[in-house]
Image (cartoon, rainbow, N blue to C red; front, side):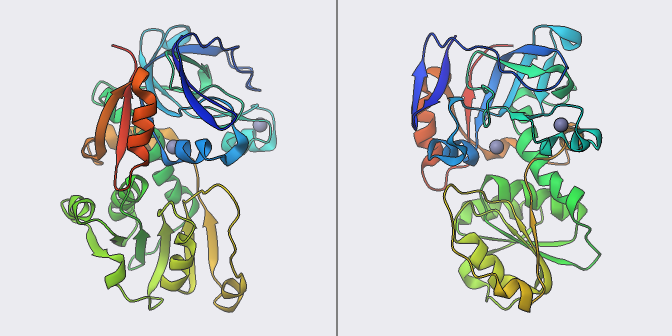
Length: 322
Ligand SMILES: [Zn+2]
Ligand SMILES: [Zn+2]
């Protein structure tokens, strides 16, 4: 089958990629899913840069058609963490932290930039007709935005700053604006900020907002190693920094402010799919305006170049037909 494969730090398009099915630890049957569309994510760019030392087929944001099992013939999306069902995390519905897990397109599990991938049946979520295939590609990143609501309790009147007007910043802003409190997005691109203004969300250029430690919550969606430092300059004492950025490599950071100002740091990654699918089905969250461009799978390397260029939102890969 056709696939975009990462090997020894190099991404290549292979026409006859022969994959052994992955071996996730769960007892749930492994279902072949024929991929329709997939999205390139910041994490994919980081993986190519060496994050996680991953080798194999990339791609964890996808929509496809199940070709076996109880969802045969239906459009599905798949939760990317494949847990064991047995450990204490899995028992508490936290398979995203299962120490035995594989992660689709990220950890020992071939991903979705290919004609087909394998997903444990229990990870599959069938889609309602009201969610289009291209919208469904955003379920995974949108679930990551909803994850914040699982982790943190907001009180009315809380002031929330979101650093970054890119893909994840946009989704976090839409979710928190609706369900958390008073949101402002601090970004660098007029066109991206305008898009958020259209949703009634307050925006500003980051350099225009004085770092006066005025926010109860600061969400770092910058995707940049410097995001944490700016978050520290905006969060008020006793406030919370929610870290969404993952970068390859190690950063230097003084921990003293966390003690002196009694800050809370919340790392935030993947979320449950159900709230994201529901929000898309009810048209509460808008995602299609984030699509920058679409490429066929065989032009995957060009698609990655595009996704890497500054200011670009979501690049989609068209892989199969419905
Ligand atoms: Zn992602
Ligand atoms: Zn487990």
